[in-house]
Image (cartoon, rainbow, N blue to C red):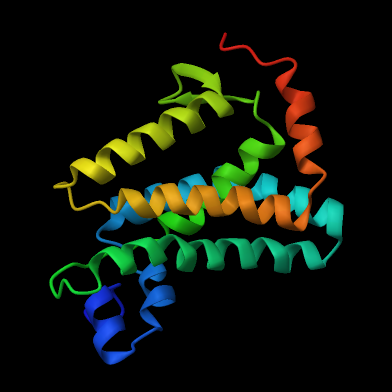
Length: 182
């Protein structure tokens, strides 16, 4: 764990850049791992299908690249913020998972998503709540969760998806014509 965890100080001082990726493959506990993998399964299968439909078999490579780069890119702001703090650590695949989740929202902003199977809102509404919550908690801190990675992973997912498939913007805005909270 200590060799793989994302420790910005070690990256900065000892040039251990591998931590940008290895930290995405370790989790704090079983619940953390299960939650990340559940969200990845829920939305990843859809993005994998969409990318392979659009790009053929290379779509799998694009999908994997988005996930892995999401892990890395999501930690860059954390690195810049904490590179002089020897005791700051972060771990988990949340940046990559968020990139997949937000890519899904671009393709299906009106798709109802249910929190605990009860509260159903369109994906775009949940995305806005998620961004606001991540910004708030990132500033508040104190809960040992890298909320900045969630935010930057999601933003990366949007940018990556638009970069590889610009037509998604037209699709997204066409879908918004039918947007409704309920």
